[in-house]
Image (cartoon, rainbow, N blue to C red; front, side, top):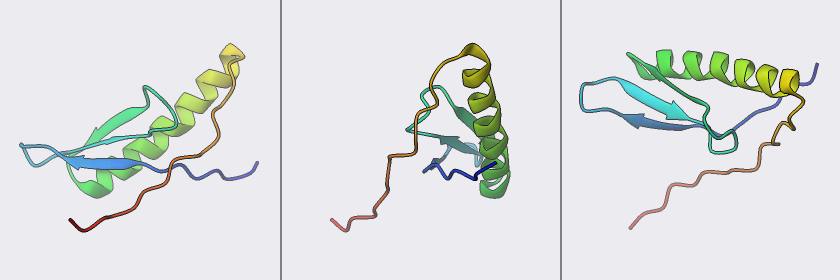
Length: 72
């Protein structure tokens, strides 16, 4: 099986936890007590999300999003 890498967006929450989502997989979101926990959690969520799409016969969106930090 080929490894596919999706861009994830990590956002700190006011309570010190982290939320993370995948722009290319709508509805694929997760959280974690730490940044590392959130990344581990979204990895599992991505795998489950893709598996569900395949089981339903829906297409799996390819990774397309990119990120860039921009100074303002």
